[in-house]
Length: 137
Image (tube, rainbow, N blue to C red; front, side, top):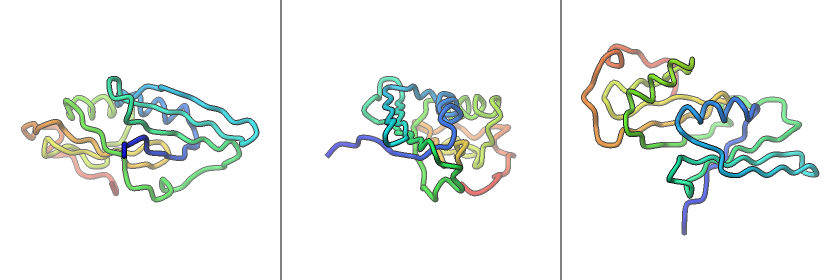
């Protein structure tokens, strides 16, 4: 077997693509079904195109709540502090800051939890050490 993708339903594809773009993901494929009234958009990290996130946008949907209780998507990053800083600078709330230099959680515009894991481990550093959790992750 081979991992193909993780599918998440999204209300606003552009907002989710912008959010995942902050993490470095780029669109690799798109399919629209006029008869089925949906769009599938596949994103992946450069150099890791086989591990994809499928965004499913059902055209007539009126909003999802709570991320449809989806668990999370996890990505390994080279510098968790830099990634979290980029996200914060773009207005994203860090739900579980990387106080330990290893792990953080954020949420997409539709409430899907994204786990960020540091490749290796960084020394704990401010401002992350004193930053509280801001919700469930």
